[in-house]
Image 1 (cartoon, rainbow, N blue to C red):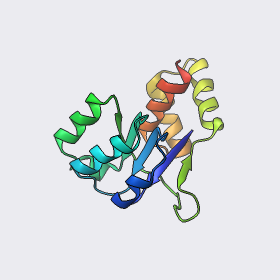
Image 2 (tube, one colour; image 1 turned 60 degrees about the horizontal axis):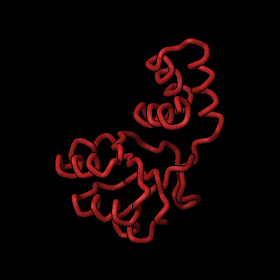
Image 3 (cartoon, rainbow, N blue to C red; image 1 turned 90 degrees about the vertical axis):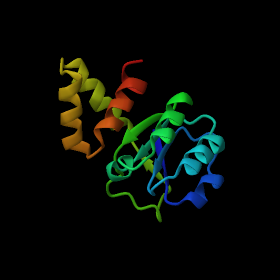
Image 4 (cartoon, rainbow, N blue to C red; image 1 turned 180 degrees about the horizontal axis):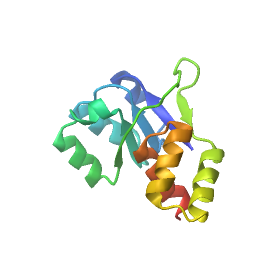
Length: 135
């Protein structure tokens, strides 16, 4: 699973139309959100830093919801965009989630353990759980 990191609004128009997961590393306006959804029609989730989540307009949040795009809070710790424009979430993480769930851990326990182990955000772990483990 790959999370495309977008550092500025200028990059939105250059995105691949098939992007499904995007991390916005800048404070997005309503127009930026609309342009993102238009540029990436297969978009399924957008992750934004928690501080930017607080300032994202209610209209932008509702627009994403109407389009069927999940809004996730979180950061991409330790990612260097100058090396790779994608933040990769390896199969090891998905397998670890599956293992924890099969051991009888609750969703809450699984999320807490994985947050400590991987530094991924709670919302992103829950997204992976819903989309890849519990299908």
